[in-house]
Length: 148
Image (cartoon, rainbow, N blue to C red; front, top):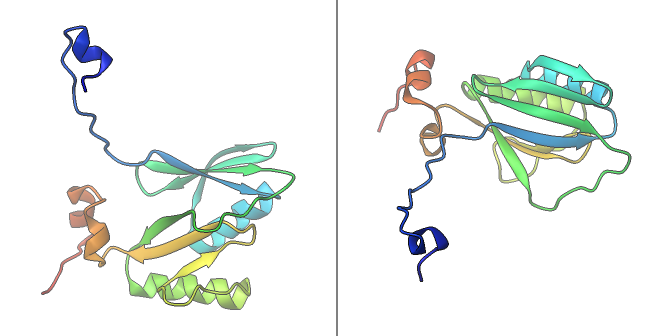
């Protein structure tokens, strides 16, 4: 079956996705969420306003935090954040469990729900299954090497 553009004699072009620009999470208190994500992950604020905030994720992405009256937790929807190495994963785990008293999901290195029910998985640059998502230049800058 041909698409509408092909019928009109136009060539179709494959779309190439270069990455994810941003993610959005819902919280009941944007100021507290900014403090939480700044503390646990060291995220930098880009800007904020009434009931909303934008935090830098890596070099080219951001996370938007929007305040809502009623949270509607998801069952399996989640996003993944990458940190540098196992030491940083250990630090995130320590803050989540000791400081914030959050439970980690079993059978994952660092999988948790934030205080508002958003599910997050944390991996590191040494996980070869994830490294293809980063521009190679950023992997080189981080000094990551892989052994067989």
